[in-house]
Amino acid sequence: MTAPALYRHLFGPGPTNPYPEATAALGLPLLGHLDPEFIARMDRVNAGLRTLWGTQNERTMPLSATGSAGMEAAFVNTLQDGDVAVIAVNGLFGERMCDVAARCGAEVVRVDHDYGTPVDTQRVLEAHPNPTVIAAVHAETSTGVRSDLSAIGANKGEALLIMDAVTSIGGMKVEADAWGVDVAYAGTQKCIGVAPGLAPFTFSDRAFERRVEKPQSWYLDLGLLGGYASSASGGKRAYHHTAPVAMVASLEAGIDRILGEGLEKVQSRHEQAGASLQAGLQEMGLELFAAEGHRLPQLTSVRVPEGVDSASVRSFLLQEYNLEIGAGVGQFADSVWRIGLMGPNANPASVALILTALKDALS
Ligand code: PLP
Image 1 (cartoon, rainbow, N blue to C red):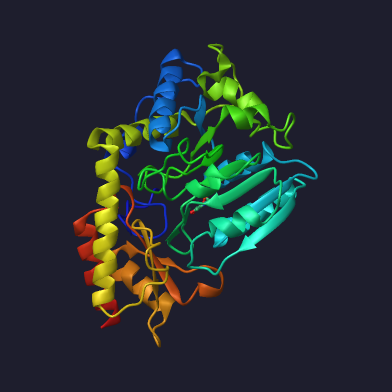
Image 2 (image 1 turned 180 degrees about the vertical axis):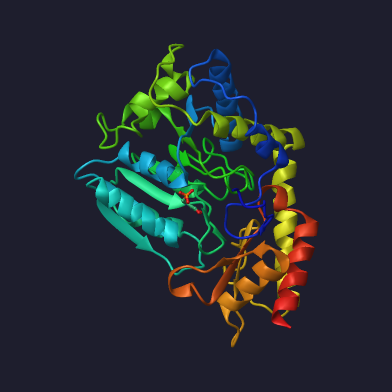
C-alpha cells in the first residue's frame, strides 16, 4: 500500500518544492528516448538551458543524473594523469571538486578560504602559472556565499574554467559566455524548480577541442554523449543511453515556467525573497553566517543562537509546520541552519511562514 501523500515545505538547501507545471509534466504519456517528438523536446530543453546558462555552446544538455554527475563530467572530460587543477575551496562543494579532480589523476592545487567567505580571484589566479583547469563554485550551498567568477574567466590564460552553478542557475544571473566559463554544470532541484534527477550541463567548443580523448567514464564521455543529447550530432541522433524521458519533460515544463515569467523577473523574485528573509532573521536578533555583500538570496545561512539545539528546532519545524530547513555542514553542522527560497518558494508568503515558524520554535 502506498502511504498517503505528505506535503512538506522544502525550505532547505534543496530539493525545493517544484513548480506545479514541472510536477504535472511527469504524468505526460511516456515517449521513447529516440522518438522524434522526444528529440524535439530535448532540443527545446537545450535551447532553454542555453538561455539560463547565458551561452551559445552547442553542447548544452541535461545529463541523466544529479548535479554531482555534472561535476564528474566536467572533470573527467578535461583532466587526466599529470594535469594541474587549481580549485577554489570555500565550502563543501569545492572540497568535493578536489576529490573528483584527484581521482582523474590530476595534481590538485587547492586554494583554501574560510567558510562563509567568497572566492579570492587574485589568490586563485596566482596559485599556479599554467594550470590545465581552474574550478570554482559560483553559489556555495554549504555556506550561502556567492562568488564573482568573471575576473577569473577574463584572466584564465590557457586554462579551462569550470563553474559549479548548481544553486545559482535560474535564481541569479549566470553569464557563462561573458564570464569566460568553458564548462559548467547544475542541478534541476534548486532554482530551476524541478525534482532532482538531471544535471544541466554546458561545454564550450574550446573545452571540446581540448577534451580527454577517452575519459575514464564511458557514461559521462562528452564525445559520445553529445551525439545523442545535443544537436552536436550533426543531425544523426544515435542511442547512447535510455534518457530519463519523464524528467526531461518535467525540465521542459520548469524552463517554460521560468521563461514564461521572464528570467530577470524570476531572478529578482529570488533577490527580493532572500533580502526580506535575511532582514527578518536579523530583526529577530539572529546572526547571518555568510560575509555581508556576498550572501546568496536563494540560500541563507544563519547561526544557531547560543544554547539552542539545532536538531530539536529542525524537528519541531518539521512536526509542527511540515517545514524543512537544513543543518550546516562539516564543522558548522550544529551551529548553522541553511534556509532555501528557491524556484516557486521564492515569494513573500514563504518568507512570512519561515519567520513565523522559527519565532515559534525559538519562543
Ligand atoms: N554543487 C553544489 C553547489 C550543490 O549545492 C550540490 C547539491 O546540493 C551539488 C554540487 C551536488 O549536486 P547533487 O546533490 O544533485 O548531486
